[in-house]
Length: 256
Image 1: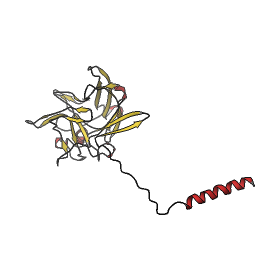
Image 2: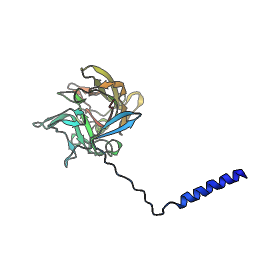
Image 3: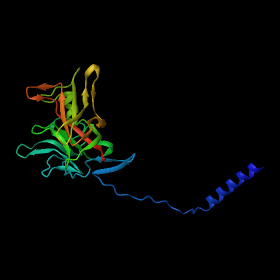
Image 4: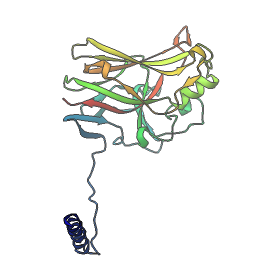
């Protein structure tokens, strides 16, 4: 009998609570503005910074490879060199192009995907440098622990690896193409290396990276500068024949 009374009281309280709600009550969502180029989130009391490329303004071409004042996002400076005489460039450019069909250098600014990483509109393209190694660095001699970045092949590279392009041959058994990511402290001392295979035809594989992939960079340790170098089994008298490109997005690092 005592148990029945307790149950009755709980049910009665629930009925009172439900009937007290106003039928026309509306819950509204509050829109919070988000800073586009950089997002800061808290993860186990550690601040995590994310560098994306959404804030870069692009014209009708859908890309930008010339930054006279430098390509700077938050506290990060990205190497970019542009030669107006030859209309050539190296380092980092920014693009929104997603042409996954057209082969050749006229389509050098397209990622082999429908968008940037995590459905973003824009991304960066790292192109191997002649005058300087393609790199980004933290300004003001700052050092941070990198967590990761997202990477994918460009359409130019995918089509060249599949069908060949000028001096670049189509890949076959035992071929590979990779990017070597190296970290350096503020004194220029190397802190570590991370390798990622953008294509791997060793041991019977026929892998060509064709989607945004997360690369763990924690092995680099605390860095001031990060360099990108490309290596391939397809080389000639003038160096690597494989086009030295990779698409980059969402660079994550710790603030403390």
